[in-house]
Length: 355
Image (cartoon, rainbow, N blue to C red; front, side, top):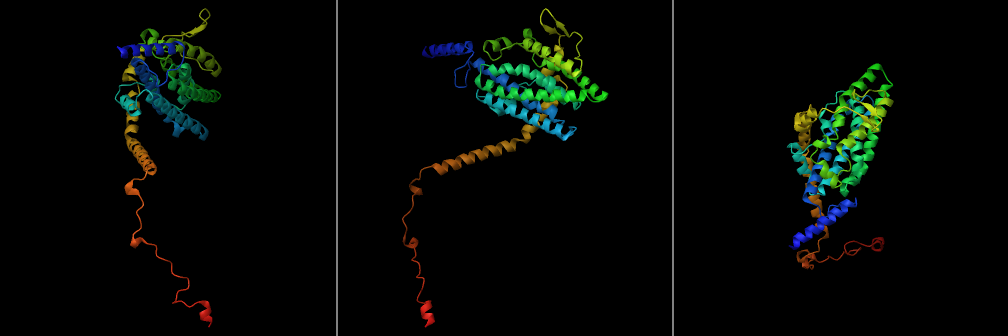
């Protein structure tokens, strides 16, 4: 009875914290369903950052200049860091990195559908920066105010870096649009391929999203999928006009009454096919992640062994001396041998030698 009363009180405190738009911290009581929902979302986000290194990392060695190579390399390194921040946040919920990675490889956890599309040209690096990272910013900035503390704090730094990534991508496309006719055609072709998958990044429509309503009630999410998708479209249209490209949607037009752009419905059959593992690059992405995980096993084992040995050495250095460690009294054989006189009888002194 006491346990039931205590849990009821804890749940009331939890609900009060959520209602006040305050943060839930790892040591706070939380409903098990809240914890599981967070583990699912944070893990999917972390997996997306790590898997998302593959499409652009494919072009590091083929970037057209040293400057472009350095920019792309720095971006891919940033994405690795984002994944580590998010795995750390998931660890505060009791989910280990090993556990999450193994679930990903086994197909029990997902990552963003956008990364199952191929990067067919270097131009795609710029398009991913503009559209994919732009969609990520729309989705992730509200997460800086999510109800779970470690997740929200991780998102602050991630969003700053994603904003820089978007500017890099847009700058690359703008440079190409000032180039040759072939380069401009390449930008348009790339935008045509990535526009619709970028719209799908926000997830299914609200009516078909099984998690949105509860996540909104708990403050994990603060905007619905459709709200974020609309914000992204409204943001992208003027950017496309400035860039000089046409977004591939005949239904895209300004709605004065709504104060937003109307746009056509994405192909949700394609979306669900990709989510279920039937996209162009699903098998390739997961196989590459598994190979990297398996190849890196010896590094993880060595790091753990080093940490354990270092901890053992530290414990040994600080441990109090026991009876066996006491200094033993010197015995006859250990007695200090007196030093021989400087001038021994066998060695004549300088005065004697002078005589």
